[in-house]
Amino acid sequence: MMVARPPHLGIEVRELGKTEGGFLPDVADCQQLLEQYARFDPAVFANPYGLFARLRSEEPVCWCETLECWLITRYDDVASALRDPRFSSSRINALVNQLPYETREQVEPLRQYLAKFIGISDPPDHTRIRSLVNKAFSSRVVETMGPRIQRIVDELLDAVEPAGQMDIIQDFAYLLPVTVIAEILGLPAEDQKEFKRWSDDIVGFISSGRGLVDLAQRAQNSMMELTNYYRDIIAERRRQPREDLISKLIVAEEQEDRLTEEELLATCVTLLAGGHETTTHLIAGGMLALLRNPEQLQVLRCDRSAIVSGVEELLRYETPVQRGERVAADHIELRGRRIRKGQRVFLVVAAANRDESQFPEADRLDVRRHPNRHMAFGFGIHFCVGAILARAEGQIAIGTLLRRLREPTLAAQTLEYQQTLAIRGLKSLTINFEPRGGS
Image (cartoon, rainbow, N blue to C red):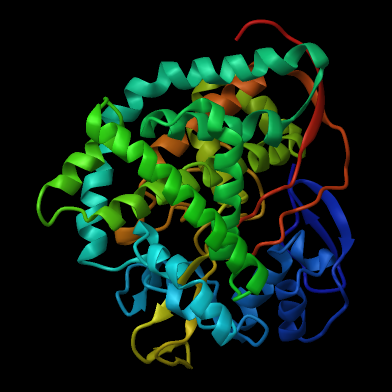
């Protein structure tokens, strides 16, 4: 089934294979539409691909007054910027500086920890820390985890299958990756509810794109609780090391010039907070896309070998992490626009992944698409450290869902998205199905 290209304003938006959300506002000015998107206007925010098409065509490098940042939307420009050191990843100061002065002082501990996050740092610190973490997510290591991932998937489906209904996010798509990353780190499974609260607060502030006081304060509280939690775990591992990632990072921390104690804590926080977001929304957004494109769902059911290319296409089509944020380390000229040193820049990978110059019929879901050089995991030195794991989880999870759940249908057509411009994530996704035993 062919899906229409993103239309101009005032024309019905067709997305994910069917109409969802009616009409975009009939606004002639692309900037006005962008401002509505930045303020989470439901008509624009829930379905941003029409806006992204307008930006690529009319203002591929544009300034958003509400967000106080530049947006870059064309594939070649985003790919180039992701590898350009003039677009610095050390961006937390730019976000914190949007807060009122008194709040900035209050959340100084938060700023210091976030500045040490792998994804919010530049070389040489980024290079040193990442070299340690890469070993835990190599192809060889992830391959050995496949059977365990499959068992977790089957156990989660066993728990919900008799009811004939499930919330894919709450019952499955969140629990799978958080269980896996907790086991990799060596954290108790019974603490998962706390993990989610802490992670949601920290990621919510980082991905908000704005210096909002309430988000900053919640993030600070959760960061302090999570680091205190880790201090206890780390102290225990120093006494009794295990075969988990925290124990291995402690060895690195004890080797001079490899990892400081504060970097150890920040890295552990990063891995927990960022170790499930992409996979959760890949599974949920991917299943929604397939339910709304039943012919593509059937392809994956009939040809199990297509799940590899299918997951890559779902990552492109409904990119979970919609944009990367950078700060200009120098004055930069791009397509006739002058980005000044210190200004924030959003590299909108979700827009780049729908660029017709790179992806023919970019708004059509094609689970056998090849080639498919999407940027869902970024490019360059900040390519997602957990990409191999996220792909494995996505392939096993979605493949098993399609095999085990017979006649899945959406329980509701009206869906609500999380109000963040960085993450394309549903708040819930309830489906009905006829139970089917076995895997």
